[in-house]
Length: 68
Image 1: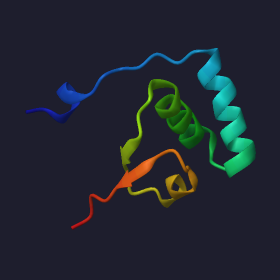
Image 2: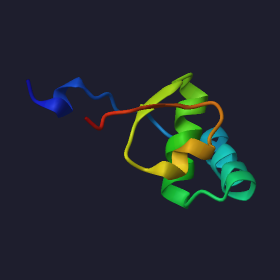
Image 3: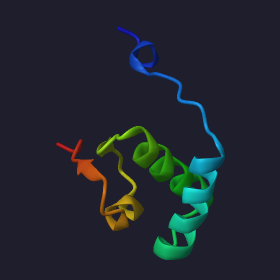
């Protein structure tokens, strides 16, 4: 199975943009990371698979450890 076939595209709106700015200010995430975190929060996504340790600062996201 192609991994991208499992992905779903989620639209970005003003509420997500505003939340991303708050996350940048509060947690010091880079804009792209803040946008990912804000999108997760908006859509109720609570788990994320990432190698980016910056997401450990995001209290509402659980990091899925994908390293073996």
